[in-house]
Figure 1: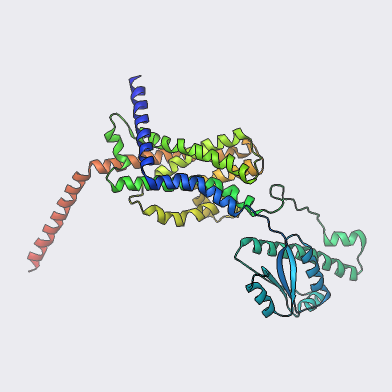
Figure 2: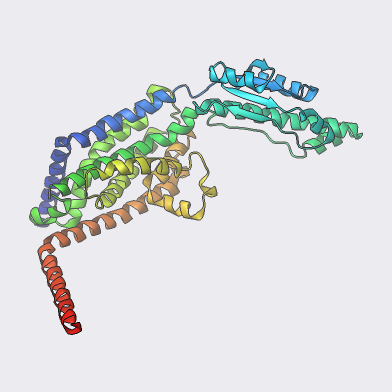
Length: 421
């Protein structure tokens, strides 16, 4: 019982010591509360209007044939774009684009219709205003939808001219019927597509930057977290890792619930997951993030290093969640590299629960991966604290040995020079 009391006493002392340090560090508070609470609001506001309809475009039709005119009519009929101007040449279309009267240009070359008639590959060019990704997305989607429909119409015309009709014609044009069904994001909203992954990533990234900033500050002031096993009587490395981690875990369970429940409700994002299932996911994900950050922050020796990492890590971690590119298509290196980050599994699980409306059985493997990561990072964090503590305690002895080695090397070089002379 005395061991348990000592363990709990040390654990609470370390946790309270870390909480006091967090609330005394203005930089950490800004990252945790301004970043952790503010970033989800900023992202949600920026991508709130994730659905854009009738994007105005200009059309330059140098071909002026039935095929190009039909393509233009169908393009104008799509939900994504609206043909606002028919221009005589590209100079006029570019002028409209520069004046922001249109957000894209579709150009049909002079030989467009001729190549269609000859059965050759006909090409058209698309130019998009890249000041917003939504302009590019709408123009490309609208053009692709019409292109697929036009290919089908052209095939029907050619097979009909060859004498085919009825069921035979239908089987030749469309041998296997398919239905395009996107149940979780029918309107192709970029907000739903992006925010479902970005929200949980905010937890990992702000925690890492805040914890690393705190660790770098302590080391600059010669108060490394690795000193705690020696300072607090009777406390081991495990108590230091868990005690410090508990301080961040308490803060981020509140921030995590705010991000997972309040932000989607406030901005109308999908909330198809059960409250209990998402809460269980947060328990595993935030615990994993705490130990992940504890492990990697052991490499941070200076406060400003965090801001360099900020520019590098966030886009990489976001892409590796698989929200924009299927993980099955990742090269082997990036697939295995993604296993380093809790967000790889946490964001996928959150999308499956909250956007797709799954339950815990659908994310069982992802939660198991988070649990394995937690164990691995606990061991690595403990090893890092132990090694750093040993180095600090033996620093003077190591310096003495280094000086002795340098003295012997210097003496040996001096004797060799004397012999050469």
